[in-house]
Length: 184
Image (cartoon, rainbow, N blue to C red):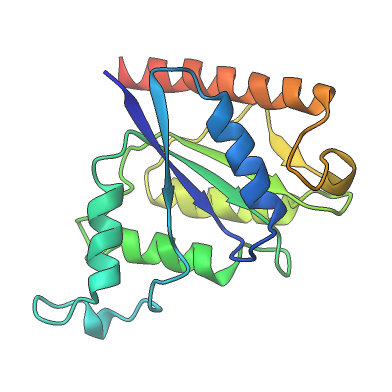
């Protein structure tokens, strides 16, 4: 049976390095895993006043319905002000509510931070992990997926240099091992 892995990209920018890296990861998944890219840029900001039976924004419900059946989640995030982008945090909030009905619960996660800078989104990576602990999402710890200096690791067509591609493959292999242990 094919395992479906949600891909959430924190950057909404069209030419986002995170989107390019996510596409490479999707292409590297084994045959029995399928990447499902989730749109987060259209989600209205979470406001509990709207989360009642007759008031739930259709975008929230569609997102929750899309995430619920997924087997795992890959997060790709840039770093904005030493944290995650607002759109990504909002998606976590939308999916975690209403209380007791979180779509994230127990889904194995992978956090990849991608940046043109040298510290490679370290702050965002760790900040996101704090939220995932609360959301009860077991998250791959090693290898850590900090991708810094990305402009030097891929060309404008999204082709990744061989050593970097090998690192991406290793991250996926370790995630598959982790996923298999958790879901066996």
